[in-house]
Length: 481
Length: 100
Image 1: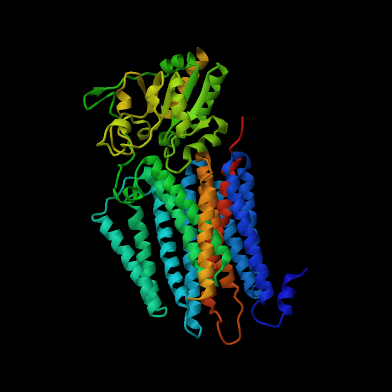
Image 2 (image 1 turned 90 degrees about the vertical axis):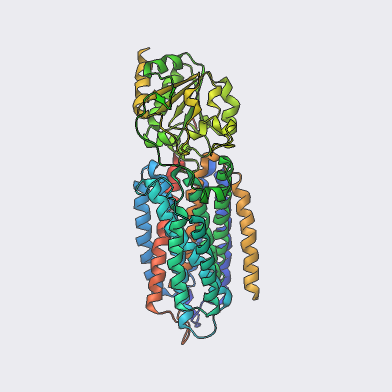
């Protein structure tokens, strides 16, 4: 059935109401597909099908839109789709797993940019046509442009920080709370101006410029390890920008519903992250916590305290005689790309009758679920990945715990030291295991910039060096035993 | 206030509620694919971009100048990167989660 014939058969220049109704029904169907697709993400068994379902929903929505299209312009649109699709596909196929957080942030930014372009195009259309523009359309144009641009520039900065091209340390801008507050107020004022002037060009241009800067000032002060929160929030924003754009493009239900789904999803994830750190969102966004990722060699003594250290042979001996071992990964494992070595060690231990589990803290790494993805890439079966509560329930029955490149998430000061920036954050209680190995490059401070008492505890042994190298040495020592 | 706006706001609010309900059940282990998957869905903007780029010329009014169609086409390119890249990356990640 040639669909273009149907479109041309009707003499009216715009799609008739029958077509519109069918398109709306298709949009409803794709909303169902998105909802069920996301629902199936609740288990690794169904998750992949869920993603495919959501993709099908997107395809349905896109194709449905073709039915109202001017055929000549449609060819251009399809050409643009091929270009964009090609770029997206190539990058998705080539990105390394450890760069996944940056890629997600970047794609997110592009989504925000796309929403901005759409509403700018709508603004142009309003400007060249006769008749008074709808006030709510203008307001939504402003809102979508604001959120879309903040998302775009903010996501670029986030991606830069994750990639390391932008400093991971929070760049404290003097008076940043005031600057961001002012930016928000002025943006709102500009949106009002946009409506009141019936769509004056300067208001939208100023709004876009301001919003781009605002995205930067909002994201720059946030340190690398707080990125999971920021990326979740930006994810939410891109959904809200799409929803706002939906109000402009003829109350497009596909955009409004899907945008809301994504907006809510991002906000919930952000709340989960904040709760896991026991810090409020305001604290994360504005308090400028954290320092640069630590490097450098400070030996076994720091500020007069000495930590006990061990080498790979010691570790191998102790692990061999253990019955149950918990591995606690952190950002350092990602940096050292040690996830495959970790899995090899786990396999080696299993051969010797040792049970191995992984304790994954919700904010370990730089992205929600970061550690899980890296370990999955290394073929660690997902039932071995325990979340915070499960890990703490089991830790006392573990003969050994092995902390790999994690710091704040195992710092006992969070339990007791009221003056510590991490006070109150739930941690993995590795100090309750029989013995605790900490694989780290040096005694340098972690992200929160505080010393970790765990390193100096009686039952803790530091194992200095690059994590991947250390793990490979331990495996070699185990084989020789 | 026009009725379409009110209904749309209603739909928006309901969708927000549905969204928060389903997301809460996703386990921590799948948070990264959740973020990249929901990010791909936010590329739904492409539907708005296509609608704008392919809007039909009504005689005499609401005709769209070529440069506005150009802006819409640019939006399509970026939104497609978001959509295709997002779903493919999510699939890559989910392929890795295997049972013993």
